[in-house]
Length: 138
Image 1 (cartoon, one colour):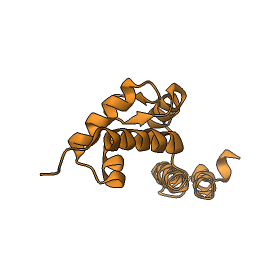
Image 2: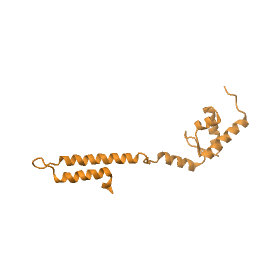
Image 3: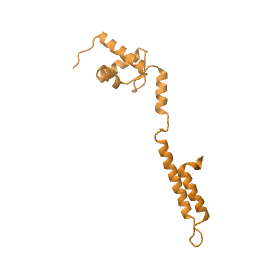
Image 4: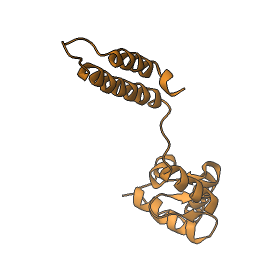
């Protein structure tokens, strides 16, 4: 069992938590515990005391924030939907392929009397090729 901290050590830890929060904008209990080498419950107690001092703001279980603006920015980033740029081209090419296959299925369903190819099936197959290249939407 660790020895109890003196009031000076306790104040120094709380001051360091406030300093780290201001530097980074947000500080979690896990981060502070790792940096300061404190037990999680001790860190949580120091978080409550730091927030009670009014120099930093506690936002639920998400940690300490330097101010209300940092909380708003964090929540906007957390709840905003942005299409990941790395997956967008993969999704677009997949959807183009699905559309092209649908057009080709339509072209294959066109038959004329005697089993020959319908003139529109050639147009539909050309359109399917354009869909695959992405030129159909430009």
